[in-house]
Length: 332
Image (tube, rainbow, N blue to C red):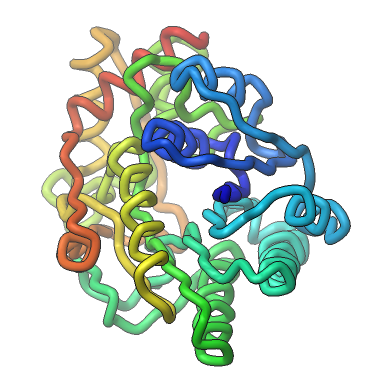
């Protein structure tokens, strides 16, 4: 029996595939390379010394997804695939709704057809919206401020309804905070196609001279240094959380939302300082206006993951930046 990993060539997906293979799991990866690169697959093999089946396909293509399930015995799915840029989602909302939601509906329908009723879903802390006060816990009301966030929220609701309709289903919805870092090998890390949307790839491009400076959006928040505070989590810690979630899905039914974060917040300037220390490079920055929709602080109450998965983050901001810089240096 195999685990299907959708979006397995992407940033979090590739690290999770490494952890799955090293834990002795058989995997099948599907990816369309919209926001990932084919070389990630070879690097997963290089790290683990293990092989796996791969399909280049889009979840919107029902025939392609049917083929994967017909040709493999899939008994669980870890679902990463989806468009994920907040700003882009505002400018092309219909593409986000169609891709993320329709793709998930097709995936769930095909899973049900083949009797595969376990899913770990890549959700997001963005579902906590603008009104909650951190630390965020899983019992808080959810909302969203952009189409990307709404797709995550809608898929959570779809999965909950699916579990209500059929008691055999088990879905774990992992609400990520801010993944950064890279694998210790320096072979896989965050390498987006086009202009980065996340802080660390931007900082790396400034550190290695590809960009002149970092744009910091706002220094007048009610935080220790005025810049936005986020819960940054090492991507390897996050990947290990998926194995714990998968194990939970094998042993429980119903829908379960769980935060994956450290429970600690770091400001933008905290990250800049840690990156300068890790790289030995200067990271100049320019303060600009706040971005609409940004909150002052966002960090997790991570106690539920500890309680139900026996999982907690172990790697700190220094290791996150050191590993990120190693990957950036190896892949300039």
